[in-house]
Image (cartoon, rainbow, N blue to C red; front, side, top):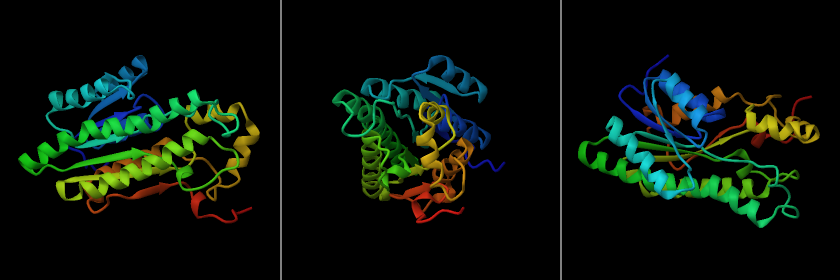
Length: 260
């Protein structure tokens, strides 16, 4: 495998499972020193140990913990080259607007959106300092979703709204810091075969079937396919890509009628 990340330091939130874990493995395989952040201490420690990285237990909705996460990465490895702000939730009580209570709404917004704000706010000053001091560039990839681009009759209203906001936040930061050595992009995966999705759809097979029929590729994505997109966006191969909405959805957002 091409080692695009030799000498580079990356932080992955939600790194203990799903897309995050696949990305931890991919970036480590490409030579990165990886800092794994998660609320699941056992799984997070296992992920970090697997790639000879560092685990930092982090509640991404807590500003103090988020600041400590990125400071620890810099103190331990000397730089911050990529922040993959990936942590997120999709709980069953986030449903139609008619059924979703205000507490469920707020919890999803905190984890999916406010955490991205906090992570960017903590990561960018480190990247600015190293760019000013040594011309070392930084990259931020924020996990959004294809649902930020489309409407769904089987709604998860707070999740959808949070991911749309991640797009706007990422675009704004990508423009603001483009001449200061920092690229910021939003990654929009389609449905991914992760424990989170399997748990959600296992409770409602009809909902799963309704989604699958709309995917031209005819299947859900594998976490490793999304990790490959993160590895590209964070690397010098994407040096002219910033403020973008990078869609990896098996053709969903481009489809009118899918193949039989």
